[in-house]
Image (cartoon, rainbow, N blue to C red; front, top):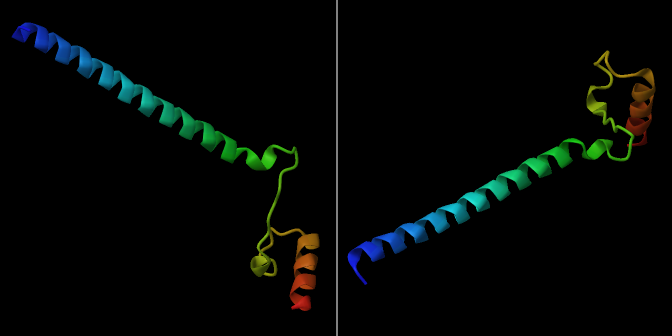
Length: 79
């Protein structure tokens, strides 16, 4: 095999490896984006948005509904 044929063979091999790596990286990025979208909308899949309140802040925060404050008081009194 002459040196020109060896060089051509090496160039072809490197191109295939680069394409393989590129496809692998693209597939990983696409998978990560897909998982992030699923995680962002996971709580809305069943149609009901879930809200979680921290009962430690219920007494001092004006943003908590009165019903939530009452439930937090009940939970604290059981302890």
